[in-house]
Length: 272
Length: 272
Image (tube, rainbow over all chains, first blue to last red; front, side):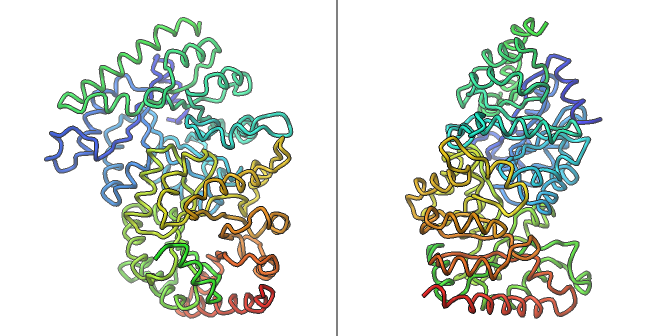
C-alpha cells in the first residue's frame, strides 16, 4: 500500500490527527519506572489506545537517537505495534549531499520501514532526491515551521517578490514527479497558510504547532476545510501523550484524541 | 580543552585537513570482510595512520545511523581511537524546534562527546540555540554548501540585496555570543568565498567539496591564506579513506594526507 493511500484512507475516514510519539524517557508515568522497557511499554499502550482514531503516527527521531543504542531498539519495537494501514512518519528533518542523503533514506525507508519522512530543503533538490526517488513512500518538506526562528530565513522576502518559504513551495511542485511530496506548515502561521492556499494546491500538509506551541486546532481545521484542502494531518505530541502522567495515561491520551477529533468533526461540514 | 582551542592548535601546527570518516561498510578492503567489526577495524587503522597530520576528524552520522544499532556501536568505538587533543566533528546537519534540538545536542555533545557539530539554519535561531549554549563546544552552521542544490535557495537574492547565504552569515555573527560558531562553505563556490572574506571575518570555516566533489585544494588554500583567514579545516573524505581499497589502505590514506598537506604548505607563505 502506497504511503499516500494510507493518508487518503485516514482522511476519508474523517481522521486528521497525527499522534506524535515524542516519548521523553524522563517524562514517563512513575509506575513504568519498574518495567524493563519503559518507553516501549508506554508507546505500546498509547498506540493500542489511539490506533482506531489516529490518522498517522509521527516519531521524532531525536527522542530515540538521544538514548543511543537502546533508543534505536525502542524505535524499532514501537514501530512493530503500529497497524500496517496507518501512516508512520520519521521526523528527522534530514538533508545532506546525495550519497549521504541516500544513506539516510535507506535507513528510514528500508531499514526502519517508515512510510514517510520529514526533510529540510536548505541544501536543495539533489539533497532530497534520494528520498523522492522512493515512489511508494512520502516526503513532507519543511516550508514554514511553527517555531519563532521561522522569521529568520523562511520569511525573508526575495527579489522575485516571494518569501523564501513560498519559493520552497514552488520548487516542491517541480520536484513532485512521483506525487510523493507534501509540506510542513506550522499551525502558528495561520495567516500565511490562508494566503498560500492556492500556491499549496494539492500538496498534502503535515501541520505541527497545535497545542503546546500555541496553534489552534479549531482555527486551522476551519481554514483548511473552508479552503477545500482535504489531504492533511495535524500533529499533536505532548498534548496527547503527556495528557496524564498517571496510571491512566493511555485512557487520557485516547480521550484527548477523541476530544480533538470532535473539534474537527464540528468543522467538517465546511469541506462539503 | 575547549573545542576552538583544538582547532587553533591544529592550525598553528600547520594542519588544515579534516579527515572525513564517512566509512561505507560496502566499500571496505576485501581482507577486512573476515574480521568481527570491519568498520571499526578500518577506522582504527585510518586514525592510527593519520593522527599525526590530521587537523580534525569529521564523522558523517548517516554512515553510522544507516547501519542501525551496530552502526552506533561502531561510531562510539571509533571515537575512542581519536586522540583527545584532535577536534571531532559530528556531521549531522541537525536543526529542529527547541526541545527536540536540545535532545540532538545532548546526544552529540554529552553522549558521544563530540567536540563540534554541523547544523542546518533553515529553522532559525531557536532551533540552534541548544547547540550554541554549549560554550565549550563548537558549531559549524551550513552557509553555502558544495552540492548543485546550493543554487536552489542558498543563492536566492533577497530584497535587502544580499543572497540568502549571506543573510545566514550575518545572523551567525549575532548568534556568536559564546564564540563557538563557524560556517560550512563549499570549496566548489570559490568565487563566492572570495567575495565574502570580509563578511565571514573571523568565523572559522569548515570546507567540504574538495576532491570527489570537484573543489581544488590548491585554489582554496591559496585564497584563504591570501585573505588571511587562518582558522579553517578542509574536509576530505573519500579522497583519503578510499585512496586504496587494498591491504595497504591505511598507508595509502597516510600518504595522501601527506601529499595534501604539502600542497597546503606550498601556499602557507601567503599567510605571512
